Amino acid sequence: MKKLILAFFALSLTFVACSDDDNTPDPNVINEADLPTEIRTYVSTYFADRTFNRAEMETENNETSYHVFFDGNLRLEFNGTYEIVDIDDDDVLPDSVIPQSILNYVALNYPNNIITDWEIEDGYQEVELDNGLELEFTLEGIFIRVDTDNDDDDENEIVLSEAEIPAEIMAYLNEHFASNAIIRALKEMDDNTVEYEIYLDGDYELEFNENFEIISIEGITELPDSVIPQSILDYVTQNYPNDFIVEWELEDDHQQVELNNGIEIKFTLNGEFIRVDNE
Image (cartoon, rainbow, N blue to C red; front, side, top):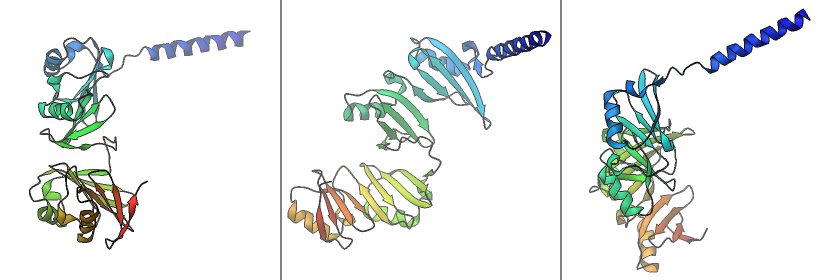
């Protein structure tokens, strides 16, 4: 009986200790009044109609960030210098928090959708629409691409400055796309392979392999004749005189082009017609 009482007493102490642990305040949580003045000013300027829930201050790798949560799943993130870096909501974000050039692009190209998320990364901005589509823009608000990777923090992806682009790639760009400014350049490393992606104004996306050879060109308008083998140009001109090439890519055993009407055509590496790709 005495052992039973001691066991019950020990169990009671354990329960009390666990209860005390559950009630330990989160050290990251801070009061609204303790938020830096710059953050509180931003909130009162753009989200005065939203109900404050909580705020957290986190420090990781000597970098501080502030997270502010509101009703309706609205979340704001600020960096250590109190600048907004991420806005995430379930509803449309206020126009006032989105750069005008991005608003214009979305209104023109996705008139039936709304922006529910905006964030700024090193070297670019990104917005997410209510249909889940993610769009990347330069820091100046120039459209880069639709992000199909959904990979915000790809450790295998390095943003290159123009000076860091390999000379062979720059020579190709200067020869065939001299009038198209470089919007963004990436070096991607995956499974021991290296590829380079170059985004140009005019909505061109070029891909180069680790030997700096062009392997893919995508556009929304006609590609320059100089980037397409002459035999392929001749075939398209003869068989599709009212259409033009908007994409070209090189595979291990063939080449392929896509026309503005959506037709995809395969050719040998020597440029001989194989078939229309209906797959």
